[in-house]
Amino acid sequence: MCELASGEDEAIPAEIARRLIAGEEHPLKVWREYRGLTQEALGSYAGVGKSYISQIEAGSKSGSVRVLSSLARALAVDLDDLLVE
Image (cartoon, rainbow, N blue to C red; front, side, top):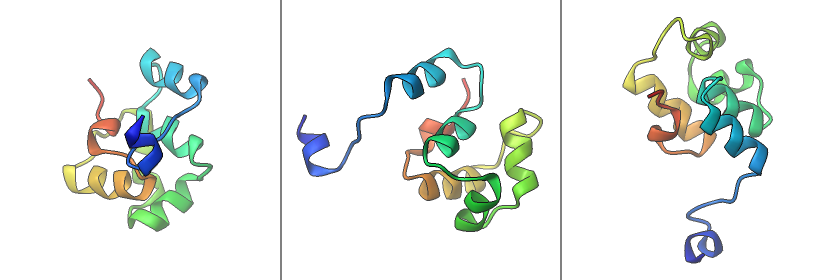
């Protein structure tokens, strides 16, 4: 509870948690949509091309650590939150 109060953590809606746990979508897409960003807007914030984001979300590219780190920063999530198991 202290992490929520201090802003170190955030509560996410149950539907978003369900989507992340289900694993049917890439977590990048789930977080991007939760933050209300288009692929183009996220790419602009993170310095990554829209097509690269599209390929990561579709699973055709895994994304380098550098790119995923930039995307995680832009989405205000941990890098681990974007990794697919």
